[in-house]
Structure formats: C-alpha cells, structure tokens
Image (cartoon, rainbow over the protein chains, first blue to last red):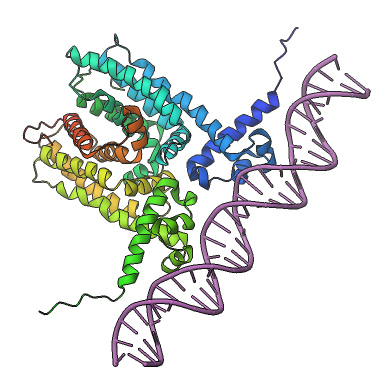
Length: 215
Length: 215
DNA sequence: TCAGGTGTTGATCGTTTGGTCAGGATTTTC
DNA sequence: GAAAATCCTGACCAAACGATCAACACCTGA
C-alpha cells in the first residue's frame, strides 16, 4: 500500500504558531494589548516564554498576527448581500452570520473591539480601505433596494453600524448581557432565540417583511 | 455690600481631584486600565506624579473613582420610560438621551465599554444589582405596552441591549464610524442626523409609529 | 504672626515585563 | 548516519512603572 507522504515542511512551525495565536487571541481579548503578558500567553499555549519569542519576535508582531487572522473573518458575512438577492432574506442571512460569529469567535470580536476602542492604530489601513470599500459597495446595494421601493428609506451605511453594534454586543458585552439576564452562560439555544429576535427587529426596522425564515 | 463667604474647606482638594479624575477618564479611555500610566494621567492633569498618589493612593483606587462617576450617569436616561408615557415618545426620548451621552461623554462610554469587555471585575455589583433591577423594571413597562397592543411583541430586555449597543457604538467605535464615513470628526449636526435615523429605525423595529417628533 | 494642618514634589525603591542570548536538543536532508 | 537546519529554553538584562517617603511650601484660623 502506497501512502501519500504528507508535506511536513514547517509542520512544527505551523503547529506552534497556531497554538500561540490561539492563546494570544484569548489573552488579548481578556486583558487587552497592554494588559496581556507574553508569560501568560506562553503558559496558556503550554510553551516556555522564550519559545513564543522564537516565533514572534515582539509582542506587537504577535498582536498584529492575531488581528490579521481576525480581519479575514470579519468581511466574509457581507458576501450574502447582492443586488439580485431578496432583501429580507439577504439581510436575515447576514445578521445570522454575524450572530454566529459572535457565538463561535467571541475572543476575536473582543480583540477587534478593543483595538478600535483604543484608536485602531494597528488596523487603520483595514478600516480606511478594505472595510470602507466593502461598506460603500453593500450600502449601494441597499440604496438600490430603497430606490426600487423594496425597503424603507434609511441612511444605508448606518444600517451596517447598527447590525455590527447589535450582533457584536453579544460577544463583546457578554458579561453585561449574562448578568442582566441572570444566566451563567448563553448556550446555543439562547443564541438561537436571540438571533431570531434580532432578525425580526432589524428587518422590521428596515421595513422589510419576512415570512419564510424564522431562524 | 455683604458677600456670602464661599465654603473654601477642601477647595484645593476638590479642585485637584476633579482635574485628576478628568485626566484619568481620558487616559483610561484611550489606553485601558493596564495601558494607562500614572505618569501620563499626571501630565495630562498638569501635576507631578507624586501628587496624583497624594489624592488617590493606588491606580486601582483612581480607576474605581472614575468608574463610579460614570455609573451614575449611566442609569439616568431610562427615567423617561414610565407605564403611562406614550411608548413612541418615551423610547424616542430615551434614545436621544443615550445618543447625547455618547456625543458629550465619549470617554466615559469607552471606559465603561473597556471595563465590561475585560470582564467587568470592578462593576459586577453595579451590573448584578442596580442595572439588573433597572432593566427588569423598564422591561416590565415595555411588556405592559405589548400586552396593551401598543408595541410589537419582542423580548423586551433585549430591546435595551440593542439600544445600548447602537447608541454607545457611536462613542466606543467612533474611529471606525468616522473612517468608514471618511469624516474627520462627527459634529453636532452629524449626531443630530444620526440620532434621527436611529430613532426612526428603532421605533419602526419596535412597531411604534411616530409622527410629531422628528428629532 | 505663628502654629498646625494641608498640599507639593524630587528622589528613590522593588517589581514586573519585554526582549536577548548562548548552548543544547531535535528534526530534516542527503 | 552524519551534517545542516530548525527548534527549544533557562538564565539574564534593561526599561518602565506603581508606589513610597522625607523634606519643603503654602494656606488657614485664632
């Protein structure tokens, strides 16, 4: 039997980098850039401190790497919004994808929030180029729907701010949400309920009727 | 002419404490608790470092004092929501008050956001008692409106999360908003426009009609 | 005016932390 | 299987920072 040889080049490197990135995302989320220590990240990754520096020469390098891995995720959900899709369906899908991101990647959301909260010095290019372009594109799609009388007239760029604000709130402010609701944690079914509520609320706010999807 | 003698007792004390608290709010907002340094706060307040320690013995003491001054502001706007007020008017007022808070006290909002983002260790009592009670009360008011058929059926506690999320977004994520909109800063008139849009959107989302107020 | 209280501050200390390094272990390559 | 490349890590260093303190300045009330 002939087994295909796996490409092992850089195997250890990739493995350890990923372990470090995962640990760093968690620690940066919990304590911010300044509050995070290489020692804690190393401990969380199960590696000695010097080993972290072997892969990421400085703390800032590591932080940038974590941010980079987050930004890629950030833009993806908006793909669902296209001129020829059904407005209600497209927006509902978008909201669901953002809520799912908050549920599955809360640390990523927190790192992103923290970065922007403190000036966004490391992601200015992302904001002013990729994100800005993306918002302009998608806002144009919504403007088209409005012109066609398929959606209430709103300042469409702000629609995205509102959806980001609401959906990311459930990741970034989870402590507040859980404390006010007196829940120890939000399980999947809780998120499903919240997502349905958010979808209904936002779609109604945009003057979009919806019937089929009760996500 | 007889002038009323001003109460000068502790005049210097109060004055300096206020200067330090203002500076600290700004610095904590910009860099978070861990990132903030006493030296920077002192410089920003125009005082030597040791003088800050004279009034606030530890960095944590100072941070708690800043938080305390914020929490008081936080609860006030919800006063407008009472059982016998007009739903649309009350909610519109509430949103306007929260948007105004974001415009006038962006640093306070950021400090609060940062604290919750990183676990809220210092304000757990506030969240689990004052805030929780307040939300339960106001959610009950909204539930009453819903029972009376004056508002669309929604999970009313989440309504507050959504309004907080949206309104505070304009303080906490201002860099993102300004960058995406390609605006150097958001002036008062910008905020007025945004506020009107947010009010329209949220009220429609709650199934509330409104006519008079075009705030 | 002067005594007691209050406020001010440069100098200094101990700790924490990011980052370095040299020497050794392990893995890969041929 | 040995040379080369890659990976690992304890020990160490310098800088930054929170906090302290002792000496001094100022203000207030009698």
